[in-house]
Length: 243
Ligand code: SF4
Ligand code: FES
Image (cartoon, helix red, strand yellow):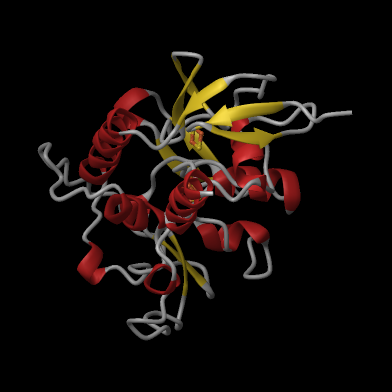
């Protein structure tokens, strides 16, 4: 029986029952920009970077189930413009001073800003002043770089079974907290072996004594820009059209 498929930027992409637009795109190596999505965890749809147009409506592709024959627009100037604005908002809400951040070159936020040609932060900087937590022997937390994606929350709760992190507050005051009476990471059972220690897409959860270990030119997004798959899709479309 023929598998159901969506039409993603004009290309048929098959999917299995229960898959989202993001799942189908990932399986077909088509890149949809995202920050809060990770294939290992339940999607939660908070960053909105993965917004696509499905049958003419803006939807989060990481939570929207794929439907047979659905026409999905992903790599378009309109969507990329909106995604760029969302990135700019994330940049000004925190202290994302890349030249002094050791995640530079390995950071999804920075890589997406490059990919979507974000040339300036555009909005006024908030300059938050959230104290760092350096209490843990192996790991450091810089809360000023948190984008509230909750990947560490989901990893610690659902995979590590520890519940070390949570989000607290509402609206502009929403922030990441450590689940200990003292609020200090050292007073939890968090460890370097936890999945939550390695899932942060930006530079909040940092391993101590290991900074700047990868030389420039060899960092993750030096080697392959985050949107490489988009280019592959472009090539595939061109080749198919030529054929
Ligand atoms: S610390 Fe990192 S993984 Fe956790 S919510 Fe903030 S940005 Fe996401
Ligand atoms: S990746 Fe879909 S909302 Fe964040």
